[in-house]
Length: 112
Image 1: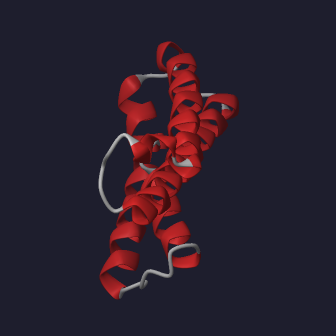
Image 2: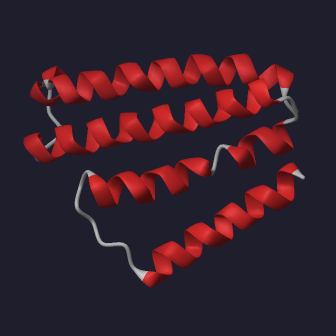
């Protein structure tokens, strides 16, 4: 796999996490899923970012072996832990950090 596709997969993962963050903060404002929630700018933004991530993923899929591309996309777990700590103020526990390190180790093994 070329660096180009690895970067695109990482960008895809970043967009997925950003989209989820917008959806999470948007739903925190709304509290219930309703028609009104779909007009919340954060939810709209999150859904739009998901569309961009999907387009990137569709570009990558035919060009990269699926058994490498999909596990590499799990860098999203790493990004979500970091952003949930800095943006949402969630705790970074030992178990979360350990689990993320295990994921990083797994990604390293797969792409080698």
